[in-house]
Structure formats: C-alpha cells, structure tokens
Amino acid sequence: MYPNVNFWVQDATTFLPSDVKYDVILLIGGLHHIPGYAQTVLSNLSKCLSPDGYMVNLEPTFNNRLLSFLCNLIYKKNKNFDHETERRFSLNEINNYYTSAGLTITKQLYPGLLAYLLWYNPDIFPFLNRGSVRLVKKLFSFERKIYTSGYAKKMSVATITILKK
Image 1: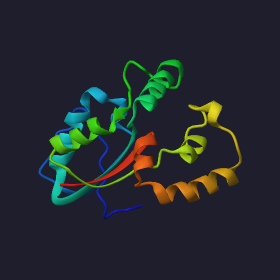
Image 2 (image 1 turned 30 degrees about the horizontal axis):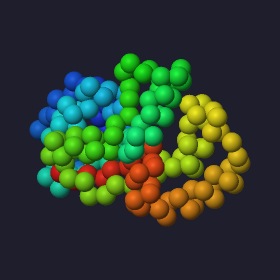
Image 3 (image 1 turned 90 degrees about the vertical axis):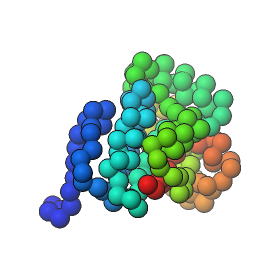
C-alpha cells in the first residue's frame, strides 16, 4: 500500500542497526514484554534514528507505590500476563533508559487513567469493564485535558513519550 515508505519488522532483542537512518520510530507497548532487553533495544533503535529523528513510545508504567503494588498483583494473578517475563517500568526507570540511549524527552503524556482502564483492556481488567461507551467517551473527553498534569503523571498506568535524538 505504501511503496515509498520503508517498514522493517525484526526481533528487537537482537536487532543491529544498519547505516540506514530513520526519521521516526514507533514502539507501542513492546518493552514491558522484554524488560531484560529494554536498555539494549532502546540503544539499538536510537542508533537508527537520523540526527533530528523522533521516537514515540507507549509503555505501561507506574509512578507511585500503590500502582506498583496493584500492577504487580494483577501481573501475578491474571492469566493474560506472564509474570516471569513481563513487567511494568517505573517512570523514573524508563526515563533513565531513554537518557542512557542518547534520547531526549520532548514530551510525556499520561493517558493511562480511568477511561483507559475501562476501555483498553477489558479481558485483562474484567472487574473494571463496567459502564457504557458513552461513559468512557465522557471520561476520555475530560481526562485528555489533564494528560500532562501532575495528577495524571502520578496516577497513570501508561505513558506516551515523544523522544528526540
């Protein structure tokens, strides 16, 4: 469908960058599945970016002890997760990985609030799968206005980060 666009699909844990540089790299919820390789993957992908290139990453995160405890409990108790191989990152941890990879955070959004939990993963959080689509839309309409607030940063279970090389 897009003959002028170059798409690559490879194993991110063993990927070695070529001389080709990319303007944009998108990572959508992949690093938490390979936490032991996250720093290596970010470092390798950073090397693939053009000097002014951008990376956008959506990753499950936590930024307080209560969410850390609850997320770990869900990972242990819910059969949809492999607690041995996947885990959420603390916001500080993932931000340190970005910095170590030579990336600069240009913006962070914290969309993992109530609307996200009600809508995004009903199989994973069945006890939260309550309410109508209308309710979720109203929540989303409000929450998107506070995605950069201190409250959202503290309470979000997911972070979108825009990074620059």
